[in-house]
Each structure stands twice: as structure tokens, then as C-alpha cells.
Amino acid sequence: MFAKILYPTDFSDVSKKAMDFIKQLKGAGTKEVVVFHVIDERIIERIQHHSDIGINAEELEKKMEEQAQEEISAIEDELKKSGFNVKTRIDKGVPFREILKAEQEEDVSVVVIGSHGVSCIEEMFLGSCSEKVIRKSSKPVLVVRR
Image 1 (cartoon, rainbow, N blue to C red):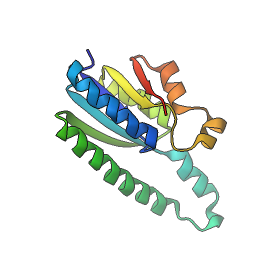
Image 2 (tube, one colour):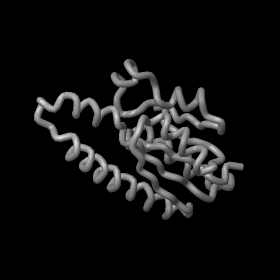
Image 3 (tube, rainbow, N blue to C red):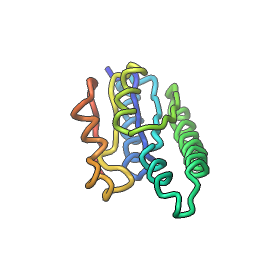
Image 4 (cartoon, rainbow, N blue to C red):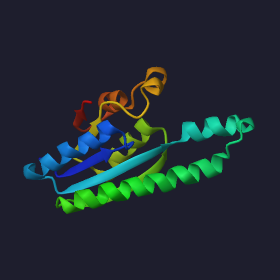
């Protein structure tokens, strides 16, 4: 039924909790998981616009990519040990838009996403990424609560 899962992660606790649900779907015929992380380009843009604060946006982006690669590799290893075929992707953009784009590009059966990301304050001002994915997705979305 859910042969291929898109698993967008921001490495928050709730997104890690979503991985437990993915493991349970192995018995329901899931064969492949696309582990997907989006580096939010809005953060980089904000830093570039406020260059007077002493943070180099290019260095920050490189550090974010390195950290994401470390985190995503650990998730990949764990899922492979559970018997899944795993593909990883790290893209840059607006998270909900990139998730919807990846959903189509990867032709997944379902999206498994955490209900809240790393920053609840950011969600209050920008809107919830998971809510936008739920509303705009053409595939089923399994939302894992905190």
C-alpha cells in the first residue's frame, strides 16, 4: 500500500518520532524511504540582509549543509538496518514547497511528517509547514503528533 515513503525531517524530536511510525510500516509493504531535509533559504536570506551582525551567510549555509548531512546519514543507517532501501536528499528552499516538489519528483505513496518543527515561534509567524503540506499534497499524509 505505501511502497515508497517521503520522510521530510528537520531533525526535531517529533520528526524523529515519525521515524518510529515509518519502521512500523515495513510490515505493511513499505520498501523504500526517501529521507528529505530542506535547508530553509529564508534563514540564509535574513542573515545576508543583516550582514552587520557579524555572521557570514555562506559559512552558515555550509555549516548547515554539513550538519544536515551528518544527521541524515545517521537516519539512513538506522533505516537500512531496519531493512528499507533508503535514498537521501538535502535541498535548499522554502520547506513546504520543496516537500511538495519532492513528493512529485520521487513519486511517493505517502508523506510521513511531524506535526511541528524545530521552532514553534517561527510556525506562529510563518504558518506550519506540516499544515501547508497537508492542505496542498496530492498524496496521503501521515502526521505524527508530539
